Length: 275
View (cartoon, rainbow, N blue to C red):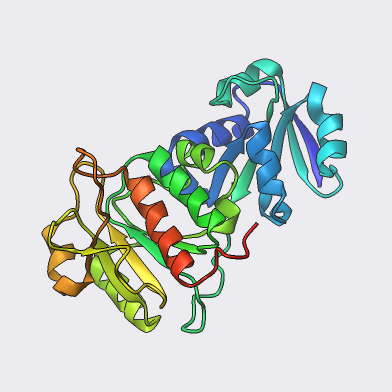
């Protein structure tokens, strides 16, 4: 594809990459996100994601070894070669492994169909990038193929979310909804059993509910919980709680979400033969 040396901060390529890393709006326009860190990049490449790489950014010292080690030859990929100083200006981590990818948002797989057996998680106004990244990792581990988000949630392709997800973005489809009504419509079209997670004492325990069908688990935001309109759209039997015996009043959002998908998988017997 090609090789371009970037020697100045005034380079249009340099400015564009900085903007994509920094601004949600630019990521949305370009449909690109930034991933760096040796472990994250190796994980990303483990799952046949090479076709999603738009550009590879590295330094002259690492260019040859990256081609050979990752099998990413410049005949097939476009490289931008930065000086050490310029790379450090765009990098968000302190590392000797000065390599980053600009990656296209995962092409929307064909829409889920009724026959698909995945559970889905929906987050209304999730704000913590570390939580969302952890949830993406949990979904990848449990083969949950899709996460739904409200438009007010943290940008799922922000560098902090990408770093927390540790390279697993390519395994999970991320769908942003403009309204809760469209979430319920999509859930109905997919014949999902829809549940809202709540700390209400009279709610049904997650571990007593039959979760053997396909499920949509709905969560509010950290701190604020869920707005009234989420609760008002569901019947009392669709409100679930995660019981605990300690003195805390609620679990971390990523922990609660992980417990839901693990329990649903367990009830279906999918963990019995897992590695």
